[in-house]
Image: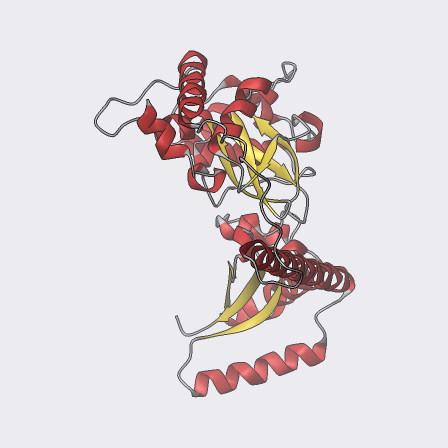
Length: 344
């Protein structure tokens, strides 16, 4: 067991977590959350705001609705298609049939979370104290991963042994083993010094003074990073607000067509038509990232206006349109791109 303790002495939540993690917004429908959990074969989703801050968790146990008064006659047909022939829990079926419920109404909150630098032992203690199956992991307050009991058990199970079953009893045994082993590793308290240390001359360079300079530099560096993150987020929020009210103008459309001609002359078969923050989408860009065939329904503001113009004016002329998430700052969708395609 000392081997386990040695192995986790310097291990952090970031070493154990599953990342990146799929999240869901509080105003999305329970149906959307249930479909995502079905497609990804997971039992829970973190609920976050537009900035990635944790609000709660929606899991299988939250899908507890009263029986619907009427069942769709085609229910089994489309459920079979969605599940790919696998059995689906009754809770999911109830969620898929209720269009009005939102994630906010059924989620468990507040969400239990730890910073990515928290120790693995802290995570195990938190899970046991609150009797939960998953803990969210954050960086600068935003969700970047999730740790489940199964993650901890897989992390500690020796490779040459059969994995332990993911049960409450197995988890409790593991947690107690870790605590006992860590206690054995802690060194005894050092004896008191025989005499007080001689103070360094005023102005002398000591290891302690240099260490404090290093700590001051690290604090300054961390603050600069946080300020830069906050400034970037403020600019992105302002861009979203602006694009929500904006429209794709005739001048922009004419410029796009001129660019398309030049691109075609260079032998290119596509052109980036519009770049916008993924937060402009109603779901934060998740449908585009999956990708979900219904991703156009998530577009808002200027992006939605461009899509409608393409659908009305360019699609009849043979142009295609694709969407993708262009970047993932801190593990979250950043910018989305709509690309105009031809010649394929």
